[in-house]
Length: 238
Figure 1 (cartoon, rainbow, N blue to C red):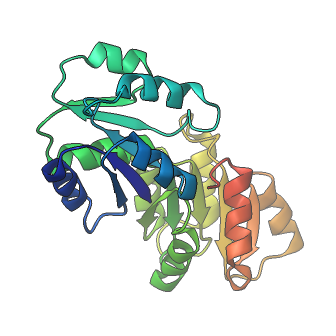
Figure 2 (figure 1 turned 180 degrees about the vertical axis):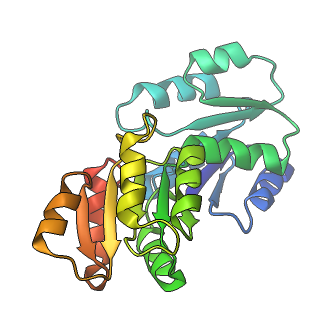
C-alpha cells in the first residue's frame, strides 16, 4: 500500500521510511511539494504523511487544495510536524496530527486506523485462507483470519469488518449457524457475507443461503476477477 512521505529533512524521511519497513506500507518519499505532485501523477497514495513546515512552500494551502479536490479529498493525511497548530491542520482537512518526534508504533497505528478497511476470512483450511489472502493482497483492505466459527464471531465483533468470507464446514459451529449469529447481532447484521465453500450444496440450500448472504461461491471458482467484483460491489475497490 503506497504511502507518500513529504518532508524536507533527510533524517526525518529516513526515519519514517524505516518505520514502514516490513509493514504492508510502501513508503514513497518526497523532499518538497513539486516532487510530491510528480509522484502523485504516477501513483495514487493510500495515505500521505506531511510535514507542514516545508521550507519556502505553502504547505497549508497545499493541504487545503488537496482536501478540496474531489480527486484527492479521500486520501488520508497525517500531519507530522514540530508546529503546535493541530486545530488549523484539522480545519484544513488533516485526518490526524502528530508532533515530532513520532514513534513507529504511533505512525503505524495512525496509518492502520485511517487506511484499513477490514475483511474477515473465516475458514479452517489454511490453504483456502492463503488463497483468499493472495486474491485480496493488491486491494486496499486489511485481511483478518479466523480458523473456526467461534473465533470468527469474536473477530467480527472486535474488528467490525466491511466484508466477511465464510466457509460452511467449520470444526465447531456450522457456517449457517455462524451466519445466523451474524444476522441476529445488531452491530453485524448489515455486514455483507460471501459464502465460500467446497461442499456440494443443493438448490434449496443455495436459495436459503442467498437470502442471508450476498454471494455463494464454490472454492474451485475463486479467482481474481471474482474477488475484484465482490470488493467493488461493496465499495472496497482500489
